[in-house]
Length: 396
Figure (cartoon, rainbow, N blue to C red):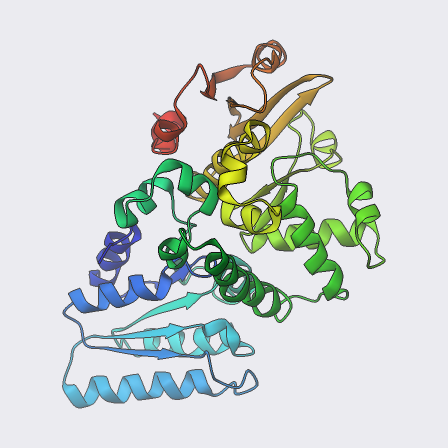
């Protein structure tokens, strides 16, 4: 079975002396539970794996009950250390307060009960971690699958990855597009919106949120003002509401609106957003265009290539701690701008959609860039770029 890079990180931390709660966080269907099960098979410590998936959210005592059970099993077995793994922990109300209490009790009593918790998205864990568990946890982020991972695990070629994206559960359906689309809609999109967003965030207009997600995915790699979005959405709303919902979708690692790069923050955050999916499968399923049609239409395929590059950069941003923007000045544009503590990297994607653009040159005149290059036609091959270690480019 294929192991993602986070396998070694989690295994190493579990084998260390008890110090911090390990939090495995990422979007739906990226293999968090599978990763933890792989690690559990290869560690020596006895463990207990439980899930809150079917627990009543108001059953706030459930976490304490599971914790107490783990302590009893540890004592009865005579083990000097024990591992408790709680999946879907966020589905219990006030979960973070319960975890904090039990963890602090074990710390006070010098009990070597190690803990791993899993959550379906960064959005679900964010508030509880920052408010209640500050200083008590380490975060292991699991982003969407990269091209290299999908190629190694499923022998997926570049063109199919660009269109079908990085959901491992959908890899076996890529030659049956009707089934693949149903899988993406029913197993990923619907539960992500209905359970991960609407049940954990105060959303006053759920229909507007759903429409925004569908519209935003369909416009991936394009600039679209919030006012124009409102004009295409049926549910009444305002720009502020829409901006808040777009931020929520970004926190869920589904869809974001990139800001235009500028020297001052006001110009950045008042700019027209450039919509970008975190996984090109989300673009494809909303595009209304099948793989053969998209691949043989150069202008359309250019949007898929740009979205694939953008998705890769977005998914790496947490790991390497940089901000991602775009830049435009009249007709000159740069598709992506990496800002790593002031170190700027300009990236232009060239394919069938366009081949002539002076954007990189103009961007370099305005800003001091560390690197600026083309991905695609006449530059770094897309397949090579999607396999780069961006950490080396940014920090070495």
